[in-house]
Length: 120
Length: 110
Image (cartoon, rainbow over all chains, first blue to last red; front, side, top):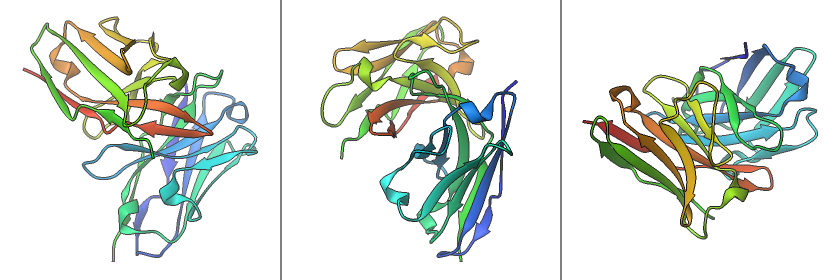
């Protein structure tokens, strides 16, 4: 079955950096587009970034453009989110999510999330 | 910037029917936005309920249904049960590689 396991969260100071990973299994990772979605404590879900199956296209929510970079290593079945210049408002649980494919434009599987806390 | 809107909260009696909606701050929602719906309970990852407006995800009970009502996407729960008490989020594909989440609706079953 599809499994997505995030890691790399933790506590970081404002202005610092962190790299999140999402290990994928149970499907052909190199065939599927992927997303990062986050949820600040007590708040709603927010789409963060998208990467096409081959890494050829990447899109971001405006609030993270220029600071976050989504990438993937299809040889390792792993999705990444490099987060630089972190701010307090980036504090959230970060979920990786598999894109449905087929032009249906939805998230069909989710990981359990990893918590990022930006605090001095 | 167009914002995806949802009712902040809703309540329904056990066995009752409730319709949650998903709109846009400017314009109308149509099937071309590929509306999808997710259920989330505290401390858990979201669960996919409905995609492409009205298709139920695998294992989702048929008391959940999706539609377009007027200028909004809608999620209807028919015969609400206690364990339907959750947060519900809609997502719209805004185009150009951008997805938008609604603010979520907290559903109370009482």
